[in-house]
Image (cartoon, rainbow, N blue to C red; front, side, top):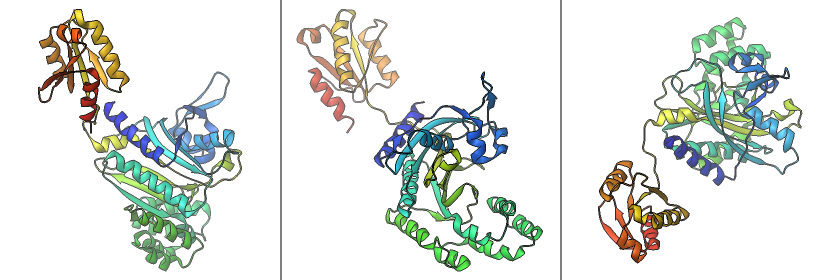
Length: 395
């Protein structure tokens, strides 16, 4: 938990630095909220049940729909854009494996009410900064659905989904077979070139000057201006019927086949939940996968001070501990009336950085003896001076 809270707090600080405020939604919602967004098939992946009133309820499988439901219910009249982030538990009934659990945590954000290249670039920049602050090694991949939709515009929706499913698997043989069955083998070479294009020039050489060209170029220019490293990938096939523009993903080390830790893009959902149509852009980070990818590490922590006393000096020791805590320093007291030596030994084993010793001499002089448990250097001083020394050790 120390590792998890350490990473969580770093991510919260980054989100706040971008001006995003936290939103919290209920742990369970009505099933319809998620079936409207993702289709009836998602019920098989949800912890769905009826409550005592006969209502069809589910533990939330993801957060975006819940956040947009909250927006429609509570914040449609709020000034735009809304910058919200969340850190919450989700639940999915699927086969557990490395980095994939039935109860898991997501850290994500939604930018609601801004439809521009600058908005797209901000959300991607935030997602990159959040992952970077954790120390995880990852690759960011960014694309846009417009070129793909342009090439597939001659197909009906079910046929498009078949093609996208093949592209999502990065299986060119399967793609060729699907296109042949649809009698559209003429699309194979264009789709292959699109998914392997390394530059925007190569993308637009395949598609021509599509209406979204200027915005795509502008978004990429803004990302480059912020020195965000990424790989271009216009073969991202996620959520063709959900996302409407820019899409992005991130993949990390040490996760095996389930190595995606972030997914997001531009979408429109509010109108599905009874609200006015509003542009949105957001993402979700698999927090558990970030921790798995990081592996074991020792979180940075503030100094812990062991307050050491005798039974006779416990009262001034209480006052010293309270004074240390009011200064933002963790202070731990012995509860077993052990001798000084045993208390010091216990403090060292527990990982304390300093010991504040209050014996009869210190109590009479209203001072303390501060011992640095790393160097074993000890000095008698006032409690105020001790606080300065302890805080100084953090710099």
